[in-house]
Image 1 (cartoon, rainbow, N blue to C red):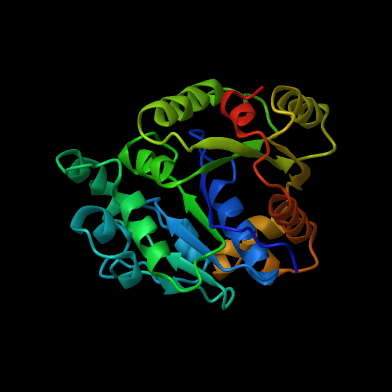
Image 2: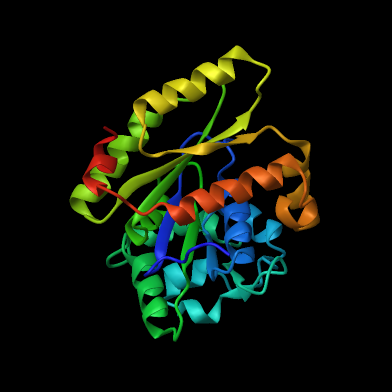
Length: 275
């Protein structure tokens, strides 16, 4: 069992680069923390619905989803579904309708705040609120991602240990800063997770070192290796942890989850500017 936070920790998992392991990270950290005693909610904000699939939650177009929460003010409680992954893990699914939500949100009042309001209201109504909420974002910076940033208090960035890994990161950091300044003063970059690490290449080691040099306090010690098991698991509607508990991918995500659980946000101002 891992220590539980005193109040709900809300993470948005973001990187404007696609294919860096955002959804994989959201699903596997959530599964690992649920197995270790935490109550966890994953909010799927990506129209592709990959997090919903990996958590065994139906997200066909006729299902009510986070889309209705954002566009029609449906309470979150109406769309939360239990994950087949673990009894302490729930999911707010995404449907393909989310693809049009960017346009529909433009004309709505307080369009950047809609997820935050729904999430805060739901957490306040719970007898025992979730310990962790992970919001999985689409790779672009549109209104869906902005809603995620406004709803969250912490940003977790997965960074692939490959060439160009840090490209686009400065843009992401300045976006986080803008949101902190104008929409969500509580937002901090607290966690960086190195993913898809191939220990056989010098490049992966260089990228990992470069990230650690830039973000010494935010970068987790644990590194997620490249792993066939991690890639296979979602197609079975599972996290790698239930798909192959003993695999290196499963072990790494469980270690990363333990590290997150044991860290509190020390000296948050440091996190904001990446010093």
